[in-house]
Image 1: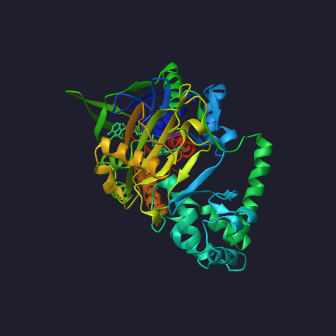
Image 2: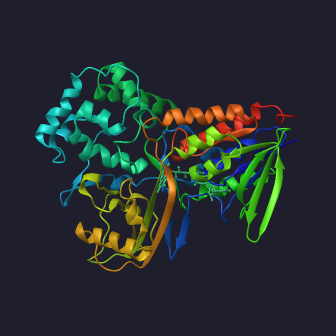
Image 3: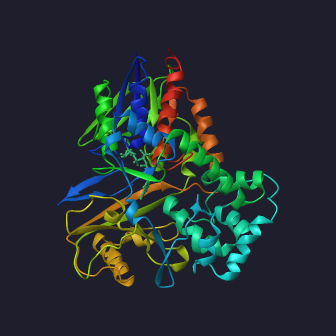
Length: 474
Ligand SMILES: Cc1cc2nc3c(=O)[nH]c(=O)nc-3n(C[C@H](O)[C@H](O)[C@H](O)COP(=O)(O)OP(=O)(O)OC[C@H]3O[C@@H](n4cnc5c(N)ncnc54)[C@H](O)[C@@H]3O)c2cc1C
């Protein structure tokens, strides 16, 4: 019997534990979670008839392990797709909201007519974009920033006005720092293979559509009827049913490896401390905590982890009663480009995007605050953050009146930044795992931040340990 400690009970850690307990191998699994709940930044609250997701509100259906895991857990009937009747998103520019042009596939415009019509890009910017069809691909294989790449192919105006807010919606990051190779490698591959960015995306879209038909997969974003927490709840149930143990209120303070290859895992709880021995360990905590835990296991791994920058953000959720002054628009929401220099980066009309998120006669709104380079705004009090979102809603002439429910969720240092050179840091983390048998690293700091990616990363970490026989000394 092998004993495995999984450090962190967010989606990464739970996915790893799930894989271990359902592997059919003789493993004893203990998840050690610092807080009093599982799910990490996936948090759902039910307040006065509102279903409030304070972290992620959905995941991409195209990536296999999100939907795949939900199905394995018996959650197929619980999946909820976005409300098609209200489909559509907007972009804030110079005091007004403009529809996002249709056909933005994987960030890149692929339909001519909506791009010709949109006021979001000037005629000069549109002409520059068209050069993508004739400009030769870049020589050489080095990494470059997302902004450098898109500006090179489509022009900087298209990046700043259109692509930047879409990209920031995923990474909260600064496009002039984010690595193309670590975030959208398919764009560079498309450029190399097809000679241009738009041609590459069109070819990729065709292939994706063929695959989707083959798998009968609905496209787009998907959530759960009672909110995102259905996923960690179901994982917890299955892990425990298979004999796994989940201990909350256990912050892992330090991990050491003994000469015989086993790991000593020291933990703190409320007024107590524990120290347990395990054959193997999976690290699935957020990036800053992982860096500390790696310190006594592999110095270069710990350094690589420290070199990954992180961003914080806050989600402000406001529930309103519908009235003449307050009514949510019938679309999904809008994004605010960095060049507007506004504190709010996105507003989502959550109850227009998803059915049943608000009680009859009410609606639910979310404002996101905090991008890389504008983190100081997060030092404001909760009341001030609520005030900023309410002012934003007034400014776009959307909503006045008082909310009946308000919640502020702070997602501190929750988003690793895949800056230029990120893949080299990931390679160093992989080398650390090679040097320390029995250790595996999971989490959102590796090769994807989205929920399907981190499920895959958690499962890969479990598979890595399942392939290794015994502990190093055993
Ligand atoms: C604001 C925001 C919105 C997002 N929206 C989406 C979205 O809509 N769709 C999508 O697919 N992705 C989204 N993401 C990304 C995705 O939600 C995250 O990447 C993912 O949930 C991270 O999961 P995790 O398990 O790796 O980490 P976490 O959720 O951070 O879990 C780590 C766990 O480790 C615990 N822990 C920390 N230190 C210790 C310790 N020393 N000992 C023991 N336990 C410890 C923590 O308490 C926590 O429970 C979003 C991210 C952010 C920040």
